[in-house]
Length: 252
Ligand SMILES: NC(=O)c1ccc[n+]([C@@H]2O[C@H](COP(=O)([O-])OP(=O)(O)OC[C@H]3O[C@@H](n4cnc5c(N)ncnc54)[C@H](OP(=O)(O)O)[C@@H]3O)[C@@H](O)[C@H]2O)c1
Image (cartoon, rainbow, N blue to C red; front, side, top):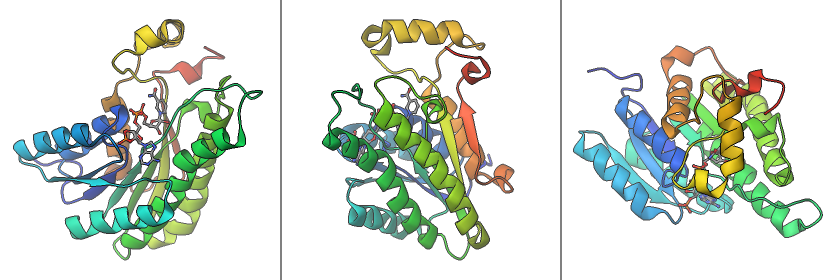
């Protein structure tokens, strides 16, 4: 059976986490060889890599702290060496802490910007280099909060808005080298324990979503597969919102 990503070699960051697992699984199902990056969630990444191999696919697990610029370069080089090249990068890793502005320290701010933005910059630069001369795609996972910031998330929303802006600039600069750069902005994605941890938020999301449910990691994976595939060969600098239609409403 032919897949949308046959012959591709993809690196997915944060592939031990909820959404990263959905993205990596969908890439493998569509025929890509997948390098699953993790930092501490080695077990989850190993489990998914094992399932991909059992299903006849190719997968490897690589580790790096993406707040370290050199580690980002090494990660991309390892993925390309393993795959015999690199055609797709999904910058999914990120942190989502909450803190009100009055209590937020400069260290809180920097921790979010380092994890969510600086790693995206460093991985993308290394990947764009590794993708020469054949080209490829880079997809950043931003958030609906890039355009609709929420309370307690000033650092997070700002980092995600910057990720969207980075992609638009990168699309212009790397386009002539055949590298497309887009963002996917998810709405609220289901994870184990979320309804218990944030009942009010989950209830409001359900009520606000025309499609009647929270997102699933695979919904984000589907959007990333599309953007990495030949179906999106004339799409770059775009932000694809994947939120069940919530952003179509005036508020949630
Ligand atoms: N969940 C949502 O509803 C939602 C909505 C919109 C956007 N997003 C975005 O989607 C992405 C994935 O979120 P998620 O919900 O799947 O979160 P998650 O389960 O916490 O996964 C995020 C992963 O990022 C990795 N990570 C964080 N800081 C890192 C660092 N300094 N170096 C290397 N890896 C690092 C973590 O790796 P280790 O665990 O291996 O340490 C973690 O597995 C994030 O960018 C998030 O902002 C999420």
